[in-house]
Image (cartoon, rainbow, N blue to C red; front, top):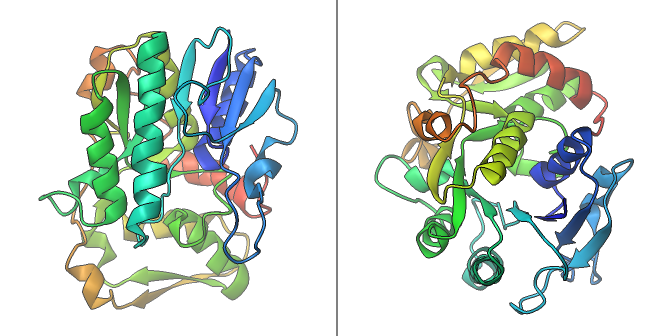
Length: 302
């Protein structure tokens, strides 16, 4: 059946892989070809992630409701695209790519009665009192605008193959793998045993998103494992996978980060279970780190 996936970066490219494993190849891709500010020309840096995958077309990112989606019998849309940089300060770019595009896409899906799966973020919770940056604010606003016509999945800490391009926005697991490879040590904030996060493997995200498409119940839902892991233990897991002597280097947490750093975050998965999108069993963090190390040390593509 024909499906459309917007954005071919981290989760989008793994979604194509996952659909291919299910025998789904009638996939129309949408991605951004905006002009790169530094290079001065349009680039599609994430298309390397599509190597070996099966799909029917790649389409430009358009802002017209009548042509934002490919023509034909589109049966579902997975929208993973956004400016995901939590440090982004350009309100116009956030408004255009995170709010306007999502609103137009949702309008087209409403009109054509197409299920829309939208990747929101647990960043909307902030430190418990709401969004702390423009990115999180844009996700919360989009939820309000489209929750009647979309499954809005608040993604917690997603990690796994194909995030190699994300720079500072990549998972801490990848950052540590790279530090260990380059310097033989992983930099860990002091008192990291006091800080916990819900880490979910990207394949689990794709599986839930697909089930949400099959059993479409619009609304806003957390998407994590429902289990939190402290950063110190996580660093120990990463170090245990390396094949050379490596250590932790404890560093102070920056003062500006202390002001907004959550102590413990984890998803409530009741809604996912209620809608039969998961049985509550996800890739354990120990297994996930082991599998990810095998990919990330050579930046293998999934």
